Length: 61
Image 1 (cartoon, rainbow, N blue to C red):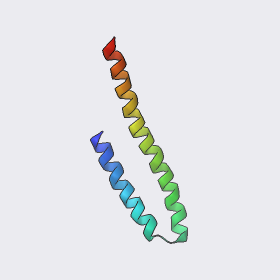
Image 2 (cartoon, rainbow, N blue to C red):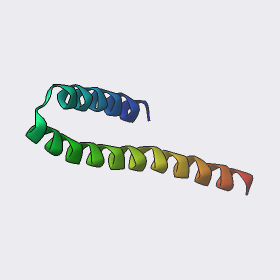
Image 3 (tube, rainbow, N blue to C red):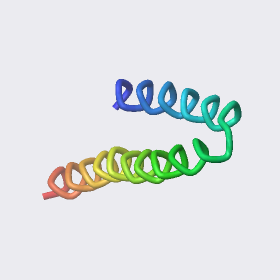
Image 4 (cartoon, rainbow, N blue to C red):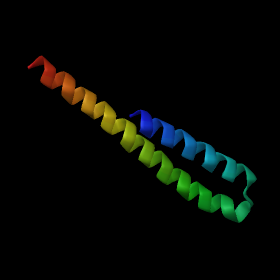
């Protein structure tokens, strides 16, 4: 989980800086990458949440 957080923060910062410094045409391409980035973050953090939920349910059995 910590590795996922670290990588997502680094990639987020890089994409943010690219977006700020990019021209109009490049911003459209970076927005597409940001959508992919957000989906990946949801998958990473959502899967961790589901894993913790499963462990809690199995721990009570």
